[in-house]
Length: 288
Length: 249
Image (cartoon, one colour):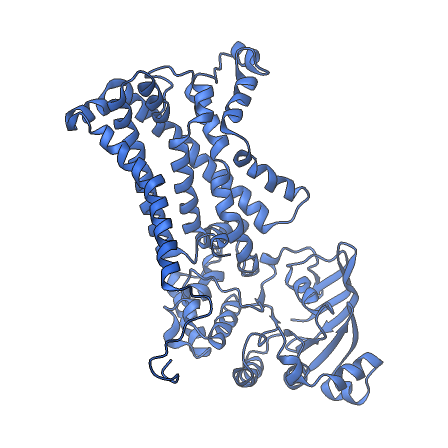
C-alpha cells in the first residue's frame, strides 16, 4: 500500500462498500438478538419473576430435584457409552478398510435423520408391553419402557452420532502413517491406540463428548415417548419443564428451564474455549 | 543382515503393484529402489517392512522366513516419506518410543533409554532439540528425528521411503552426503526408495530399477549406465535429469 499513490486507498476486490457492510452486520445482529438472545433472556426473567426465593423453591422442590438427578444419571450412562462406541466406530471407519463401510457411516448418521419421536416409538414397539420383545422381557422381570433403562436407551440412540461424527473426519485426515510407524517400532495394537491414536484426537473427542452431553441432557422427543412422565421417577429436566408448564406453573417451569439454559451456556463457553485453543486439532471438517 | 526377496507378488484388488520380484541385498549394502511413480517401489519397501503382506513369494532375513512375521516383531527401521513423527510427543519422546513400548522384560532401564536418546540426538546433530515438538522443527530436522527414532530400536535393516522427498534441493544435497557417511559408519543394510536417479546413483552401492511392478535391472551406477538391460532402463536414465524429477511430490 505504501507504493500506491497517496490518499488513494486500496480496496480488496471482495470487500463491499461501507453501507453494505453496515446493513449486513445489522441484519445479522438483529436476527440473532431476536431469535436467540430474547428467548434466552425471557427464560431467565420468567424464572425470576416471583423473586429469587420462588426460583430456588422451584428448583429444590422434590420432583424437580428428582428430575435433575435423573437427567444426570441418564447422561452419565449414555454419554460415556456413546463416547466409547463413537471412538470405536470412528477408529474402525477412519483407520481400516472393510466391506460395508459406507453402510456403517450411513447407519451412524441415522439418528440425525430420524425424528427423535420416531426413535422413541421404535423402543416402545420393541420393548413395550405389547411390543416385539416386551412379553419375553416381562417374563424375565426386565422392564425397559417407563423406566430409567428406557430413557438411557432412547438417549443413547439419539446422541450416538455426535462423538463418531466429530472424530471420523479428523482421523481420516490424520491417516495411518503414525500408527504404522508405531507398529514398526514394536508397539502392540493397544499401545499404538493408547499412545498414538487417542492422544492425536483427544481434544476433538472432548469436543464431541461435550456436544453429546448437551444433547443428552436436553433431549425431549425420544425420552418423552418412553418415559411415561411419572413424576419423581421417570421425568428428566426437559420433561419436567413441560409438565410444569402444562399445569400453568410458569414460574417453576421457567426456573427449571433456566437451569437447562445455563447448561447450554456453559457448554457454549467450553466449546468456544476448545475451539479457541485447539481449533487445529478439532475435527478437520470444521476447517473445510 | 542379508535380505532375500523371493518371487514376491502384491496385488491391490486386481492391480498387481509388485509382480514376482526377486532381489537379494547383501549385509551392510546400501541399495536404492529407483523408478517412476506407480512402479511398485514403495509397495515393495512396505512388504519388507511388514506393512503390506504379499500374496505370493517369500521374504527372508538372514535365511529366516519372515513373510508372515508381524511388522512389530521384525525390528525394521522404517523412515516414512512424511516422517510420520508422533505430533504430540517431543523429539526425545519420539526417539524413545520404540524402547518405551517394549515389554518390561526386554526394556532397557529408564536411565539407559535416556542415554541412548541423547547419543542419537548427538549423532543426528540435534543435541538441543530433545524438548521440542515436531511442529517446531524444520524439514531437515524432522527427517533426522525420524531417522533417529528408527535407529533407536537397533534395527536389523533400515528402510527409507523417499527420505529427501519433502526437502528443498540445497538441504537435500547436504543430508545425502551425511546419510552415506552414517551408513558407512553403522554398516546397516539399507534400502532407499527414490524417484530421483541422481540421488540413487550417487548414494547407493547398487540400484534396482523398477517399472510396472517388476525389477528391470539391478546393478551399480556404472553397470546401469554402460550396459542397460532393457530399453526402459536406457530411456529412464537418459530422459530424466534428476533436477526435473526431484521437484515432484
